[in-house]
Image 1 (cartoon, one colour):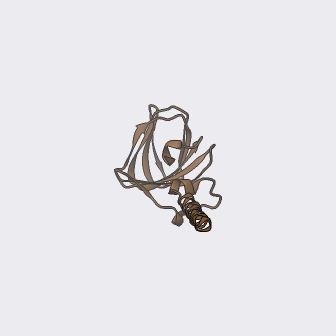
Image 2 (image 1 turned 180 degrees about the vertical axis):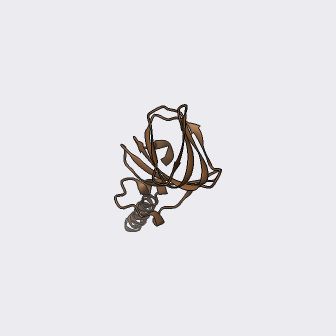
Image 3 (image 1 turned 60 degrees about the vertical axis):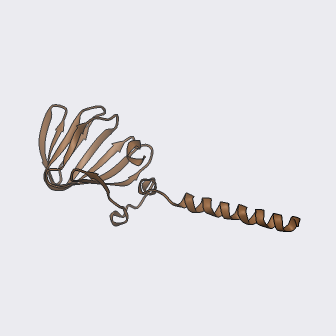
Length: 143
């Protein structure tokens, strides 16, 4: 009798242990990106942000983050500010970027720098892609 109870308990324990391992291995795309050294664009799913914008978190650690954002023509990066320092590279398209009280039209190959807590935004004039770098990483993007 004792042997069969022990066996059932052992089997239950092993099942629960295996289940926890299964759940531990299931990570969100943002969790998958943490610390990624080789970033394969085609392996990363898009997150639809609405309003003609999609985002991919490419890689990050606690000190920095790289994010790719696709804009449809007319897509708006709503004016906002955050404590993070940001640099962005225009991979393609044309954007009207506002930083503080300054506006500039930027195209493929251009970039911009945004200091901490400065209001900024963008309007996409021709469909394109921005590569954003943040320091420290954007915790709000991975929650």
